[in-house]
Length: 294
Image (cartoon, rainbow, N blue to C red; front, side, top):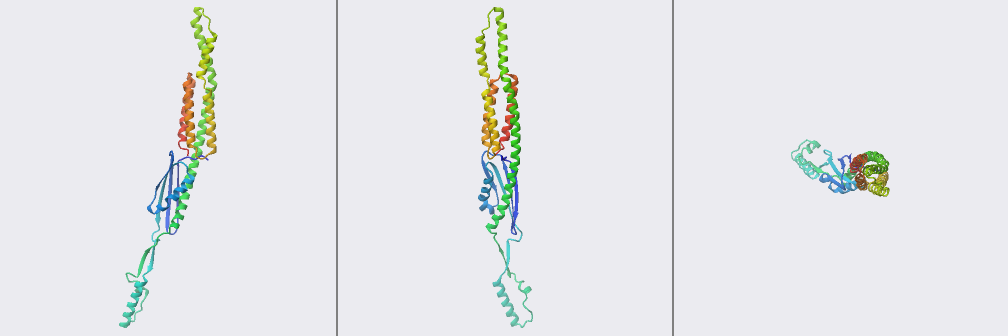
């Protein structure tokens, strides 16, 4: 499967204490780069999340965003301040006994003491944090990979369409090449006939044949066409195999561009020159698409 380097994914997970949202964006890049923008509390888990991403992504710039929230009130525990309450109770009982009071010591009375309870912050367990973060990150990565896969399929389809257009142009050039040599032969013969007929000089067929051979050799683009067809097949094989193929494809496009330029420089024919322009146009479109392939 061929992947695009463009994608986005979002994952959300929570428990009774925390909620974590993970967003991942990927764009074109020559190499693999992961940039994390996360809260300090998530720093201990950064490398683990990056490892998860690297397992699925081989190339591209990845931006990782993590939002961490603790549920309101869930991170605090209220405990009775037993030491204070014991002393408070004993003092009340002493007052009751000393002054012969009839009132009872009740919960309502005990709880009025300003230090009757203590509020303790309960740290969230790191394993619990990782469990939530891992789930959110996994969902975000899966979404991003799916988008990259869908975009990759579209890129492959477009590249194949461009190659089909190039093959049609190349077949046209291939069929026109012999006609160029024959047209040159006839043009030379007509020119020499006009020049030499009045002078009574016969045309040197051997010399004409020699000149034609030189011209045919200079304008022969068979090797370039063969190599271009080979590159077409190589691109098809690479795309069908899938995986990280962007750099290989980029190299092949450079080679194809070299062959097309050579065909253009060798051909004196106007129609072939136009075909070469179209080949270059399609090749540039292929290059643009390949720039986004992983």
